[in-house]
Image (cartoon, rainbow over all chains, first blue to last red; front, side):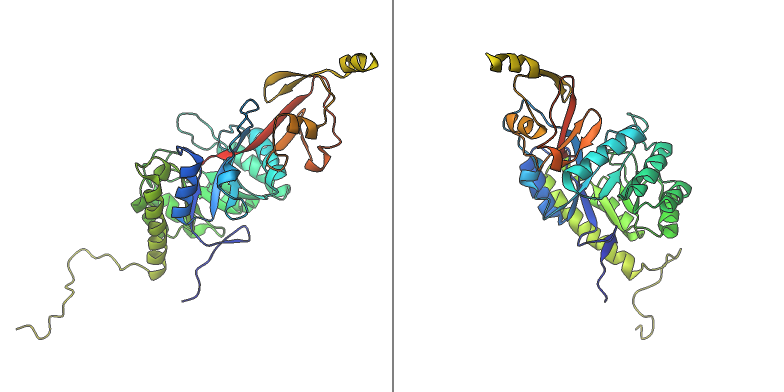
Length: 257
Length: 77
């Protein structure tokens, strides 16, 4: 079998599981969970430095950006301008061009504002960013993002942090089928079986944060997700059996006594 | 005495990450980062809405009424 590599924005990733670094009890736990997940790319947020905190423990002290790729995101941004400002700062800080764009519309649903998202994508692509875009599961808008030059489409499975799993399999299948750039299911995955379903459907990767960080044992859950994603991917490549309405015996009928 | 007059002249009231600070000494971005124990390699600086290129931290001076934002990476999804 030829090697099944995951390539996004001209980067080759070993794992098809991307993990978020938010909501953990400590940086130490975050680092352990990332290690257990096998992920080689993690999302990070950009915030003000706490000037008064003299210790200033940093995420970078626990997760080495030289070993694990940082994917800066724009979580918490509600306009295209806020998102652009955040990502330009991220680029200055890390020198990375690969970023995750996320422009939110509403605090309750954290649903993406697709009008602002399309606007920001256009500017970022022009400025040379490789943009992975968090988006709604609308196939038409996903296609528009691709046409604007997005490096990956990241449709939500269900609202961020909800753990509700894939709510619109039909839309997601259409997006996967039509997309020429990688499709990474982002947001809403609640449990490893949800991730398996996404991968079996043919997604290129999944992004998980809450489902790992909010588990009772995050490190163990991270490991479980690692296997789920591998399992789902292999199942997709293997091609599932067809569904039939009635039974089809597994043992031959010939030679029955 | 010259020094103290100079000090008054160069005293700068700035806004740093949303808080007001009075700087009694002359500062560049780099000395300001050192003053608050920040590693210049792990942060990004915005001065009055514009990103300061990290090569310029040494030469960009902090002036009265400057608004400075210093950010870094934190955990996020």
